[in-house]
Length: 485
Image (cartoon, rainbow, N blue to C red; front, side, top):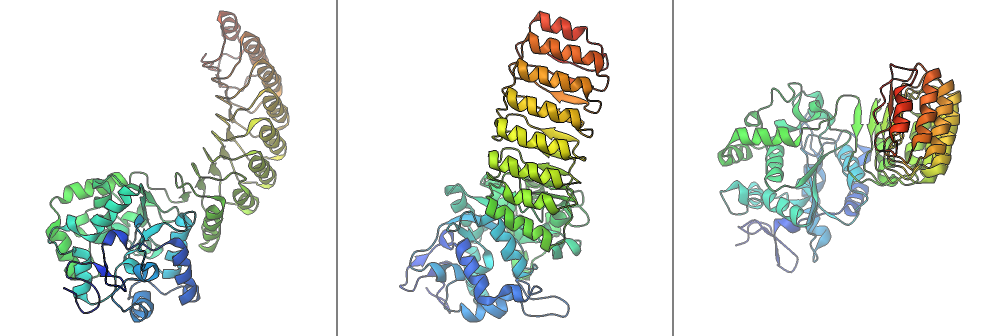
């Protein structure tokens, strides 16, 4: 049976030809989201929220733009994709209190690299019809919440090896409530956890306050949540079997919330283009992050991060572990380091630095006066790269920690570093574990420790050092330096 529009009693939307389409195929793509954004010029009204409300009350984007223009029984997503509906790969978990222009921007930051992937965004995927039609779509003709559309959508995400992206917003943070004061958002996390769907919290809205409000995790209780529609609240509460299990699931899923002053996009696999959008958003929001974590993204040339470092004056910790940064990228970062005056920690583990990249970083260290910790573990740096870094250590007076573990450094590199240690009076930790250093390099380093009294840790585990090298290190002059072999 078909209701007032084109939604069936069992909650399916119908194509123009009358084909019933289940919730798992109500996807809208990032490319289509950009078209929608351009059509309604959402950036012209930065205070227009997705839903109605505010002070004074005003119509939201759904009432103002969606309901009048998409009123033929199909949501925006199916309207765009009829007659080839889009299977859902990405679930966007959010609430309706956010400004729509900010929401579109934040979604596109994390999805623009997959422009044709199907996304479930509730106000665009569900047909915004009568309450009866909305209920039918949400419930899918069942009184069991786990038969509803959100469960079905996340089943599709699981099949497509996709993920759920949690997008909170400033309004929920400022109000002191947090995203998980919204019952539908807690229900979505519960469904994702039960189906083992990968979850990522948006890098701009991942703090504990964004998600849990001013009370934080300790004061969190999902049962105290609310909905915009009282009917929804009654339905969710009636369908929940164990609030404690939901609380535990949400707390577990949100274990790695960021701290205030941190922007983390770790593990999102963003491209340079997406990171450029993220950097622009940081500027637009006038954020002053102290920590920027971009681990496990696809940065290659890294020009976006390098440009950001040249002008940024707040970030003092930058994490770029496993970002596939190549020599051009390292050279760009080296140029940025020469100009930057705030960065203190730089983590470049597991990239593709080698000798050219090491030389670029060495040149930067000769000019930089603020960097204190540099991690270059797992980068195929050979002796010639170690020699360049050693030369830099003779001039640099601020670096305290340098880790070069798991590279390709042999005795020539170790001897160069030993020579630098004889002159350097600031480095306190030097990690050289799992390289190709033999007794010759060990003896050179031991000799340096007769002159150097600053070093507190020299890591040499996993090298090719025999009793001869071990004996030389045992008789080192600097007894305050720990030397695990």
